Image 1: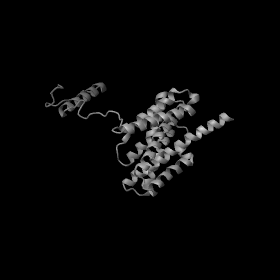
Image 2: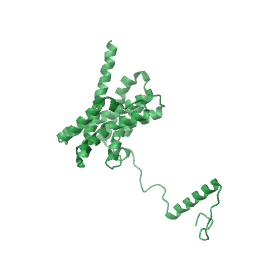
Image 3: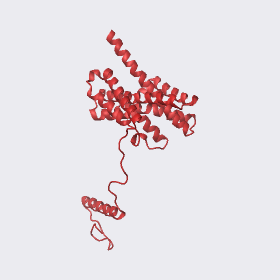
Image 4: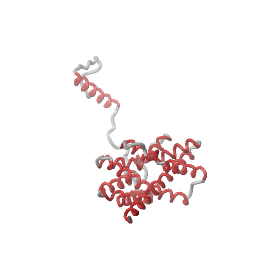
Length: 253
């Protein structure tokens, strides 16, 4: 019985972190909508997307039944409460920023770990399990950014977020299956959340590509490549490419 009570207490603690992340991201989504002068419907949509979309995407892709965010009313209610908090209170300054940052960071680890555990339980291999763990953590933010016509911040130029989710997911994968629901979740939350907080504190980010580097083709070079591709496709299909008098049979003209 003590062991059962311990397992229940641990599961409840992880659920608190999970719902706290939903609340936090619901508030963040509503704040972004508020800055863009959306109405109440816009605030609700953006807040719910931010808080729940990652888990919904995960459950749909795994195909294990109806998403938990729909079958368990506490998730939707928590996201709506987060939106209402952002509507009623003026959320700004250090008093709000750091609690939201810490809760969001812990949610990254929790959601990535949960997504990975569910993917493994569904019989998926390690790589799709890792990807679904990351998607669970960052999917809501990505859809929120897309909904407002913005390139998702997770795609680059910001402090580590998807990388922290991947670290939490990888942690789950290297821990024995029997311990994943307890010690695995705790380790995932600690590593994912800790890395997220360190990245924000120290300004860590992945290197971005330089638009000035790489291969640049002129218009003439691009036309040559297109003609080569057309000829190769025609030869493969058994046709002959007809050329006019102004199209000599060479590729370096």
